[in-house]
Length: 274
Image (cartoon, rainbow, N blue to C red; front, side):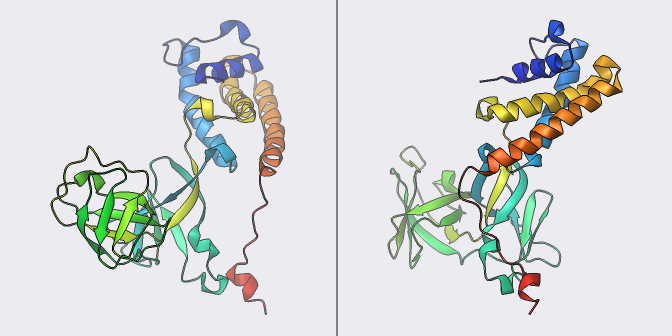
């Protein structure tokens, strides 16, 4: 698979600089410094251009302790690799109720009027694989996401979202969490179901996760950005943008056919037409 240096050199070859290939984006020569400046910007911009299948992730959001000042009741922390929200679980609610389930991204948080479940008091946590929590009257469903906080002793559990596995009336397993080496539980803590889940475009920086189509597109995007400086020829830069845009359209169409087409969800204004 292509490395960041490979992609940079593809970009150089596109504009006729094949003899001047770079060996590292960290080098101090002018060409390497120029590529190093534009590479992360070009990569993230391209990731934002389309819902690339390789870059899509799904996650339950953890509640932010600071409430919004007005309009919304709750704020949820977005993932550190978040670039753009595609949709949330709120978008699948009754369309007539969408006005009350609205959400908005501001900074590193997602704001909503939909709150998490009630806090349930934890009375025990096992040093086992997986960790089993005791929380009286939890009645949580298998596969839901929960957030744990304020545990004393086994503090490794705190402020993290987990998936519930094998729940009973008063216990639940934290799926895939090996607590064998955790500090022993002493007291306290709460667990509650998270009710905001998102599908989002993530900031993929590992080139081995890129598809070949994405690599090709990123190289042409990078070519268009660096061409004015390296060639002093606006026509070459414009040509690179033209090739990039044509390839992008083809790539979007190709990427979109992998999987069952998404359902079209009716929105509030559609339901109000009658």
